[in-house]
Image 1 (cartoon, rainbow, N blue to C red):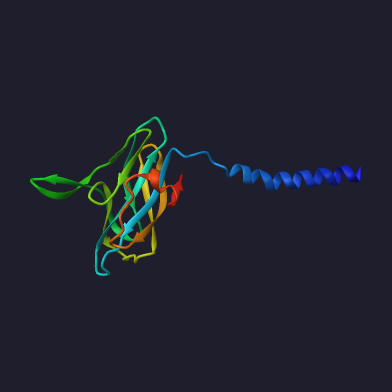
Image 2 (image 1 turned 135 degrees about the vertical axis):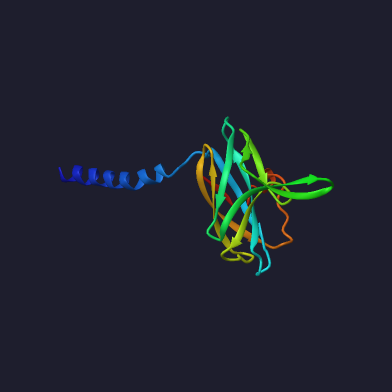
Length: 167
């Protein structure tokens, strides 16, 4: 009887340790945020921007509705456009995230704009950013500050080794 009880005890203990590990295994998430980054700005700057590649692995379109970060008092979604031979930046109410595709938030295109900075992050720093999607809900990510000369990847396929955030 004692031998059976001990084996049973070991089984229960192992089950308790293995079950949480198995529960933490997640399949690929619906929305994936890849390589969030920002360019360094002068220490006196009151604005900065953030960029990220957003992968939508679902068969349904989604929309990025808003962003926020404790480093700024105000955050907006923006796009750059050519108008009358000049580049202009304007606020957009949402950014479309088409089904089964990637959307690049990059310099000279769509991006997150931070105004009235409460702190100015330096190269190598990270800062938190929350993105709110119409269907996927709120997702948090850490944005890495890169040198001003940093060039963003043009496609995620060649940049699989970079930081990924699944949610």
